[in-house]
Image (cartoon, rainbow, N blue to C red; front, side, top):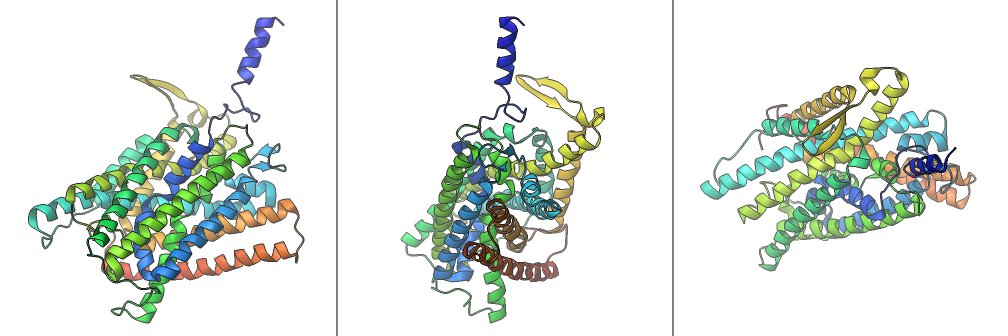
Length: 469
């Protein structure tokens, strides 16, 4: 073998990681951008409403509690990316794979149900919120021209269909590794509209126009005690969903370069992402509640919230649309990857599934797969149809939070940690971890019941596919 051929082989190896895949280039900052894109999304705009239901004491404490638990369990999950050793072990490319390696049996199938339910759900929620944001721009302009007493109501269906069309195109992006640019843009947009919402709220308070608030929530005199309790549980579900990103955490970690060790970099990204999330959550929740008091709307930047200055509200809603277009892709990529990996393993010789066709459009170079085109188009179409049928913002967010937070954020990371560390049953650490899991399981069940009750009430007022915002 000549010296030149050895250099070529070494050069080829340098382009690959230890699992034979193209060398990963992600850093703590790109991982943080993915996390921020996922958490500072539609849910952050509902936090002022959540604070109004809970009051200052429970509201602030709940946001801090969910953040602390999220950080703790996310760091446990970061050590499960490689097995059996968190630094030198074999890579687990997905959450489900990490569960299979660490817990064995059929637990990965249970994990798959909760994980993908908690990914499909936000995709539906993002579709609803994006369409409502576009309608809000029309409504705010209508109110500005005709007065706030004008009947400005528009169907969200055309905008959901338009978003679905855009997502079909963006869904042809092959995988997470090609999404860094989209996540960075989306993260910038999320900062933009969150700051606008908080700024308008603070301006309202400074001008002395803020409404009365309470230390303890659930005491709206116009509502019954039962209704207030349901709303408090739905509020906790909103906070849970807003702070949850564990369902894509392993996929984010799979984008990181191998040196320094991925688990250490991911823990740094968790700290940056969750710290940023907590500051923004408290800012948006507290300022929004101080501005609107017990009359805080479900989303402070939609038409039921601020109406002036109309141009700034329009800009904020444009930011929401751009952010959620990117966040949608961050959320659904793990589903795309799981289905396509299964299909390749099931039909390895199928050209329809495995063949890639290189295309060049202007300066853009990418590969087209007919299977990817057909299956991802069907997925986006189904999500769009479901969003058109169920446009209930706060109740939908609460149900998604209940379904996903306990199993994905708490239960599986705790169980994998116990299995990896071989913690003995009955030991103090075992009891502490099991108690943590049990508390959040009971809380999730209560939130799910409240969310279903709220959706049942909403279905009595709205007909599927005929909702107007």
